[in-house]
Image (cartoon, rainbow over all chains, first blue to last red):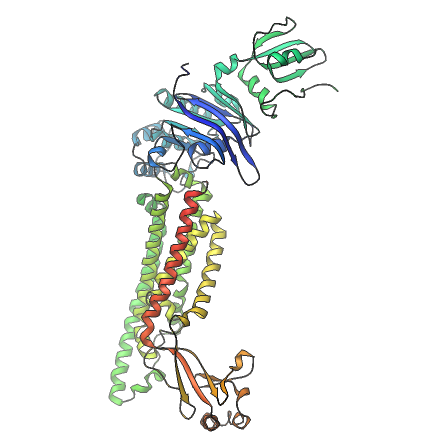
Length: 302
Length: 332
């Protein structure tokens, strides 16, 4: 993939503290144009905070953030380029989808009302019924369609599929992939379940303990990691050459997830490619921050 | 944005319009009856030269109706509670502020349009109710001259508009800062009632220096022309002003509306209190006691209306400024 793509999102040391809690700490990440980025992390990892900072709904307490070339701000021209769907999928419950189309038409310079009607009709979602009477999945579809009607360049979705059943999830993501295929759109969507997003995403931001653990194109990230399986023995040599993400030991055998720092030369280790889920779980298992030098191993019998 | 505001609040507006219309019908029908009752009474008393006593013989309206009109004093507070409180707080509670703020519109414009319409509606409803009450009360005002008195002053003229603007602004500000509707409603009711009472009871009589007129106890206290507001009255003895007995809990009597602290009166006069007010008065006069009244003349009615309205409009403006800062500076 062309890494020379202009970055749609660029943050440096981005932090957000609420009175006593640090919700996001020193997040430095880049999302190039055209990616569908999975923002993965356990609950409370700072996903919502990051998305709200990118949308300009919250202000950072530290660091820099540039979205589409500038700081997120209360400016119609900036807001016209950003689509954001909050986790609770806020819509005016007593207004119908058709009313919301009217709202959007009045409040946005670009507005593709026809696309919303067409999508919602295709999904058999009634346009004239108040959205309070729709199911959670239908509301999510309405919210996504409304956000897409703005023709944004960046779409930020906070746990969009959390409330949906598996079928609705698939429909929703298909709907999203179809929109991105149109071109020019960059998407960041958060979830605490990787399986939801694996199918459509080509980029990954992994948050844990309010820090960015991983950020990059999924292919690249996967290529940078390997699983080593070998007899149980001292891992100091491995840790010198590579970054040890996670170590699992049984009585005889050790399984190491490493970020590759060079070729694995020791023939005692059998190297294998790592799957995305394995990788993500490996990082999520360790909340110790980016320095993994003093890890305690999982499953070690003492 | 106006489209959205209308779409969100039109049912509420219809309801409020219906309530106002019902009130207007009632007031217009009974007001016409009262006006004609007053005019025919004027005509007949002029024929018999008894108009000086008309205020004591003629009763206009019915108690229920008078009560209803007096109750319009709560209209501004209701507007603050039902229109002001939920305006922003409800959006925070349901998260729709996030929906609105992610459209291509600044938060300041979002707020300006919402607040603008809410204040306009408050002024319209407050003003309409007040106009109806003022019109309805005109025969009563002409007969009893009580429209400068606390209670009547608060429901007539332009002050209800000021109150309504303030109440709605207060509701909006409380809802914005607290982010929850119910606490905002409680704060609105509490703060509004408190400020209205404090300003009405302690501040209003000092807008302009009251006029003090002394009088002799040989006669009834003077009665200034028109709808004056009697602020206070009392007694000046040979040694200076006599403390009002209600200040230290003693008994007092009313001498034509002026409180006389009998405990502090010469004992020779005290015994006369229950015999005859006339003898009591002569006795006080003979001992060198004089009464005085302090009042705001009827000519200051509109000045007072203007000052009080101004105070509440300024308070409303300050609250809106606080709201604007909170909405644009704080996180969503």
